[in-house]
Image (cartoon, rainbow, N blue to C red; front, side, top):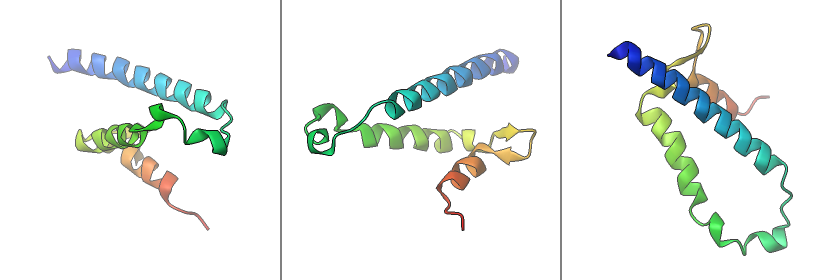
Length: 86
């Protein structure tokens, strides 16, 4: 049972990763005109959606999964992105 679950998790993680990369490219390719941006009703709640995604990674313990050669966890890699460097 666990082996079958792992196969699905691997596939799901790849799909999530590909989708997040697609979204990042999409967002990066769009120019925002500040004077018009505040008129977009669809942006209401996007902060909640982003925070819910990040929180779900931590709450589900995915943050403890190793990301590269069993040296760094996902949590450690995410925290490093938010930690200012000199």
